[in-house]
Length: 278
Image 1 (tube, rainbow, N blue to C red):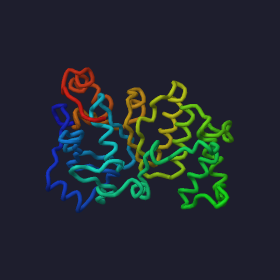
Image 2 (image 1 turned 30 degrees about the vertical axis):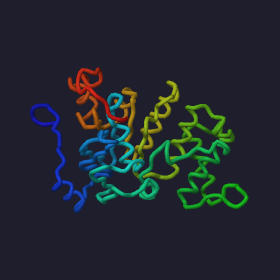
Image 3 (image 1 turned 135 degrees about the vertical axis):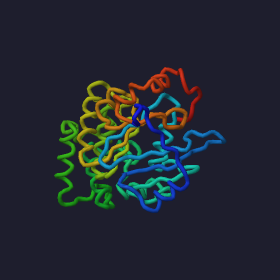
Image 4 (image 1 turned 180 degrees about the vertical axis):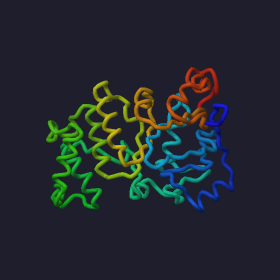
């Protein structure tokens, strides 16, 4: 915020983008002049974004704000039409999602697949083996490795899934399945954890559990989440980015952005008419 109490808005320039590409910063992820066009329509337009290392950062906005498109760009699910993306100061604009995962940037509920035909414990064990570079043997059973079994038991216990450890993942409730997905994601030991609407479809009890698990997961990690549940955002995020019509409207703490009339107007449809994808 500047001295007037208004949020400053950084406008991307070619020189700043080039400087960032050359020298990098201490941020985990950065976007410089990021845009995504769909048939002449900009879902994200000239966005400058920084995800600080060790932070818990939420991206919010009304429906059609462009937040999901931004998330898809940062996680490399989509390629940008223009602009640059940096990870640890290195240009990763043209890297694909698997290459980002190898760098420790992991998108939950996308990369971390839950296999319906495996038990809860087997899913966690397989994720641990993936993190170790191992997979299946020819008999279709999970390959054994010293320490993996103990780690799997610990993760299953930590995530409150011990009583369902031998249950087939396909038989879990939706909420339990989301908890398992988060467990398998953390088994991959991500440095940067990206969560796409982790509370979607969850009941109150599961929301409380998953919120606590995300808080614990954030210890020693960088977390970016797109989330509609404002109670969860207020509880978890140290910094919030508000998007409207594919552009960043405001950034700051929950108290700061929620006090802004333009943010409230955007949510009630009184400003910034029109919509972008996501």
